[in-house]
Image (cartoon, rainbow, N blue to C red; front, side):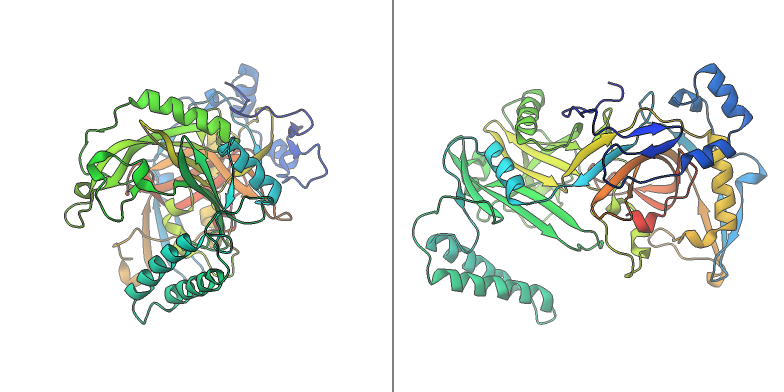
Length: 488
């Protein structure tokens, strides 16, 4: 597939075109303008002209055989505003390219959880049968009593210092008490879709469907999501854990490879997941991986893996293009530099636009749709700057404009020489898609080809993979520095 997105056919009226190097839109909506005409004409090199003549300019073939810095120029030094000398080592940088022939600019927009949006998703998940309200105001007396008991137990588990947590739970308990005054014994059919919790049936099992949002999580990012889970988890649980009190399933990192006890194959389960993803009607076009579905076995001691059994699969689908996941390229939680973000810098929408689908021999038994977006346009293939030009830009920016960056060290590493010197050894320069926001319109973004120079370290499990520290991100089209703190 080249230049087309799985699961979505973009009409000609929505496609953004790159004409004479300027990104413009065919709609009235504000599109990010990178000013490429001015920049690319002024910095075209002889190497670029050769590539243009050979036909490789504009494709990733132009980077074939590219290598990192070599020689004395691999060790530049910059001085920060606070007078700290930053010493860079770049002679071991590995160039990493995506598996693609060319790259594009993809425009997306945050999904608005209005009544029409909720109705569409709800009808796709519960195509037959009645749909009921399941928020606190409409829940049955039995459900409200169960919720109150759960919230009260959680409230009692916190100490006096956990003021915020206890305050939140106290409000939930109060709202529950208020609803109990008028609660009935039967569920109320949903006539409009102005609430965030619903109840519906799939394959004879009742499921809870929730829409949720958070204006600022622990990373300072705005989040939205859609959750589907069985009302009674024991209706879909494996026999081995049917007697576990407080049962739940999750994704955990098993210390060693474990046997998946699911009676259907991964390939068969993947077929169920793909069908569900298609029916759901959300835009997560790129399949990005699978992990075992872990069920808590009731054990609270020992290693993480010893506390779970593997039975089923968790498949992930991401926002992306040409089988390239934009999520795998790095979301906010994958960057060590997120802790350098200032309170004054507004939280952005989370980059984790990912769909998780949980599958067992009983079919799809749940899902989590993180931060859904809608793809509104995509350019033709774009021309990218020669890598030598990008390397020159990076070298100039870190020396002349050091204040653009906030360099930090990995955890458990201290600054040398009394805090006056910082040593950074970069080891990877990757061509990827990085998201930039429309500065004038909240919720509108463009994924652009970009070079990320970073030092990285292994951490976490297969969901996270790596943490990237001290990233320098350069727009691969026009050579501008992408301000990580404004975009992430």
